[in-house]
Length: 364
Image (cartoon, rainbow, N blue to C red; front, side):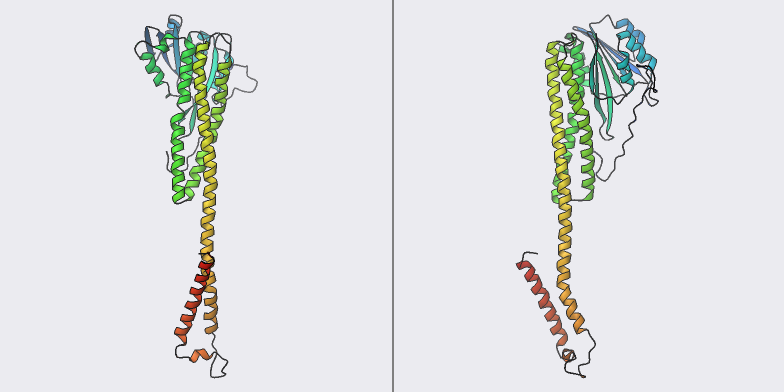
């Protein structure tokens, strides 16, 4: 996590859109998109094979030779490659358009022989960068599209590579799609829990001493929580839609596992909502503590001023240049032998008397 005094700058998010009036399904690559690379994973109950830096020829050669295949495309710059993938797996052109136009709201669309799922994952916690992941799956295939390198799928890959019995290789493509979506949802837990620990730490610091850096950090954390809420709520709706479907390529037993993922998303939403409430309360508490501290300072300054007002008055009266020889009414104390120490003692008595009065009134 960045230090509290560091202000994090967010890169502006701009969605790449086709030109106005373009035909539906028109694919236009973002100029900043990464180079496209393919990773092909082939699975059967008793074996698996992974082809790094796969080509379209590899996909064509194996797409019908294995019970389940997983094609992972990293980078969205190569539009002809994406169109060819869509042709091989008969992916709907409108869904492919949503793949390259990143920034989509999490959702699920059902087509005749495949489903299209859009989810978002936290790509960089410190930079507050989210990445769109598009998941297509049908009876025997799963195709994922990522914006850039780095994903939470390593546990799924390790499960595919593990020895028998292997539930992931023994089941159909819908179960693999569930495992990938579940990995994305679960990847939200570590950063959200880390943010919760940071909130607790700031609360402890505030109870010891509040400062302006804490307020800035609290506002940043609440802004992050609002962004998370905007991502998790539509993701929850998408998972619920995926569970309620009646398409043949999503089996009832897979829906049971998807329901568990839905529970995880609800738990994440509860955590974020709790953090938002805590952050709102801490911000209000910080304002109250700051106001109380300011009130204390003003109170002390007022008390000091009240103590010195009569002393200043006495010093002003005794400091007037009257001649006691002109008249007995002209400051006879000026000729007193112990006039100066007597004046100081009297002023000290007045000050101590005011302090005692303030303590008796419990103003000090």
